[in-house]
Image (cartoon, rainbow over all chains, first blue to last red; front, side):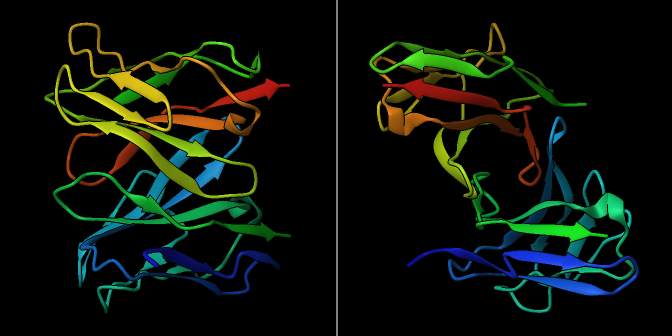
Amino acid sequence: EAQVTQNPRYLITVTGKKLTVTCSQNMNHEYMSWYRQDPGLGLRQIYYSMNVEATDKGDVPEGYKVSRKEKRNFPLILESPSPNQTSLYFCASGLAEAYEQYFGPGTRLTVT
Amino acid sequence: GDSVTQMEGPVTLSEEAFLTINCTYTATGYPSLFWYVQYPGEGLQLLLKATKADDKGSNKGFEATYRKETTSFHLEKGSVQVSDSAVYFCALNNQGGKLIFGQGTELSVKP
């Protein structure tokens, strides 16, 4: 089944404790991206990657890191999480030329 | 910069009613336009898309037409069902990468 998977789906952590949210897609898509969804703010892009070893900042990259060492994986790293990073995070992938993107199920992160 | 504006929700309709959710956009060039749907507790699913002016996207009884002259991409459905209750997002993609989303419109359909 073609899909984007994220792990974990739910995470509660404390300020400053490094964490990684994994994202994997099995559709051989070049493009991958991370978004966060917050009430009243909609979805905003954090980082994106057009292909392996090619990543770039989105609208709200502060406090996040990403890497794209393999085509299928695009982990999101929070080196020192803070409460304002409490949010619902979505990973997405797509063919670079198709413009449409397919989303994972989301990761609900709470930072206390 | 590019932006998308959707009508505010929540929208509450009775089953079999006609649905319109308005969406307008601001963008340079010729963006692709999308409607995504988010059911409770789930991720976003692509509902329909249109890639050029006058294209009509359709899926599951929903339709939207890319109107460049009015910079709009309104979502319509002739007869909604309870199972259509969800949050609907209008979005554009103008650079082969970032999707720019509207705020989302919550739809609630009552039996």
